[in-house]
Image (cartoon, rainbow, N blue to C red; front, side, top):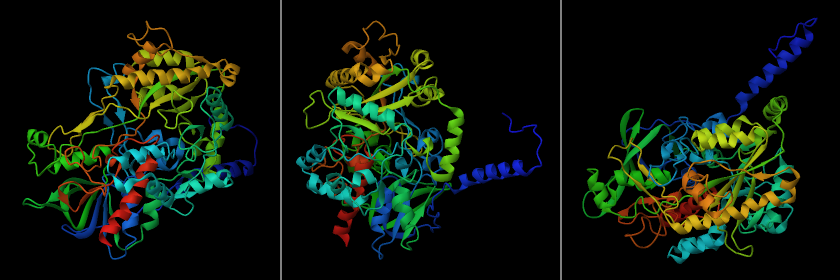
Length: 610
């Protein structure tokens, strides 16, 4: 169809339709937010607090600290305003590989990822206001109480599960009407915070409910709300979404504070060094920034707060002379504070793909999708208003009566012959052709239910190391997936529990079957055997984008980077507040816990200074 129809007309009808199309085309310009302006700051300007990184944590800190009117706050972001694709929930993958993404890759280790291009794993990270809260799948998970008990039991007394729950509530504004009707669920969430929490208005709810029912059938109990159930069971998860638009920390925390005269935000400004005083007693007094090609210095009266994320935070600390002494010397960096734990304790939620095929859903109706695109422009509904993965999740262990989840399942549903299958396999997972073709052979005539198996509490740890003293050179990311043999055994057994889904009523009704992902090393193993899955795990493991722990909190400077109040050991006036401070990774998606950490950290700072 070329838009021209040779029918007799007076022109009235064609003008009506042309005006309508022009109207809908122009409404895309309304998909925006009131982002803060880029402030003009003179060199050597003095602030009370300088926050490095306007990501999931940094935006929260900027809002909460600028609540104190007498405090002058500077927020520094390396990226720019988020693009439209960040606001529209279904289009987040359109940000991957662009200037709004740091585009990190893990280091090749000659052990894992033989089936991935270059034997590396792609780690997208948000480079914009809101950071990775502007690029993620928006799934909002608290974690399990035992996660925070582990933190507390390691001497981090500021992080008892009861305290943690209070700060989740401080952040939240639950909007999901069906959840608010249940008193127990409603009491588990906050009602008056800046962060809108809702349920996606899904266009495939019948299918996702069938998936949840299938999990329930194999012993992963269906629950009304996963967070209220302490992330045990299966169900539809809450999300940082409101009326069909993403709720990032930039939109929730930064935009609402943008007109405060004491809050200053600068963008496209890359912090290259934390300035530390000379002499034995080290104190952070400012930062050095590359801003539009110019080197500038900004000074801090009270504190410098690093919220640059699990990769950039340890990199910046080490570039500034804070880190493992021998490693810094090897990069010609003067070691000012010997902290061996900087960059260590890298933990991530790995995922392993499990391909289940079926006769439904049928091929995508392109015309229907066009209409839904117009529907989204008009009322923020349709497929564009939901996450690019589904919002159906399962948390489980090998024992159905366990009180702590060991595994998590996401699922992506691709209709028959979907072009998105190849996009995902090539662009996101980056599998080599033999793997991709083995999936495409099945997905051309069948729908693909891509179950993403997630090992929640890996024993394998990695690290972040500098390649050089050049701030613009990306660091080495050693993920070390399956470095501990116990992880491999646990993952294979956890996956085998999920493959039982093909025997459930729903999957039987659509002719469901488990597909083989071909790879030469794995092809001789029996499909669905433990050896097969161990082989797939080692060769095809990727990430679900939850790196944490590289500036862990604890009381021992030999093994941790910050104390329980998030102060860097051995340096006055310097804190780290982001995902890197987690001593142990939480159960589930990590964006919610990072926002909680920033809420708690903000109050700790206020307690210390106000």
